[in-house]
Length: 183
Ligand SMILES: Nc1nc2c(ncn2[C@@H]2O[C@H](COP(=O)(O)OP(=O)(O)OP(=O)(O)O)[C@@H](O)[C@H]2O)c(=O)[nH]1
Ligand SMILES: [Mg+2]
Image (cartoon, rainbow, N blue to C red; front, side, top):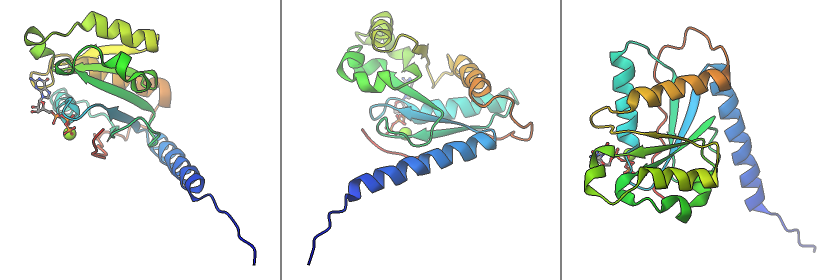
């Protein structure tokens, strides 16, 4: 009798990567920009989604943007990755978790309304994050009041055009894929 070793772990990874590629390609064909939001728990991912949905609704521009809310920076078939950092978490996070910042396209600083109450330097956090990834875009929002949401939505619209090119005019809905999870 001979023994055969099968590496199951690698097969699962290969299959997961293929599934992510299929998802990315399918969504691109239908004009959907898939955005993955990563953050520590409670950083404001859901509030950001809700504020963007409110903004698009009130401005009557229905955009077709898919969002994946995931716990860690692995490939889930996204076109774009955003890392959220709440000002209540401290401005030392880029140095502590460089992988999250290196692998993200945009940093969204959240809960800006709380800035007067916490020791957090927007400049220091942005500078540290850009040392890790020089082309990182940095935005800041107060999702509860809607501050900075127009800029976030404009950023998404611009990147959608850059990444997907001209998309069919039929895509007029906000599509939200929610995959909840914790770091
Ligand atoms: N002051 C303030 N609070 C906010 C803001 N955005 C979110 N919050 C509050 O922060 C808490 C967490 O917000 P969520 O949007 O649920 O955060 P989340 O990242 O989706 O949380 P999990 O999915 O549980 O990881 C809630 O109590 C929100 O009301 C903001 O801009 N300012
Ligand atoms: Mg949430």
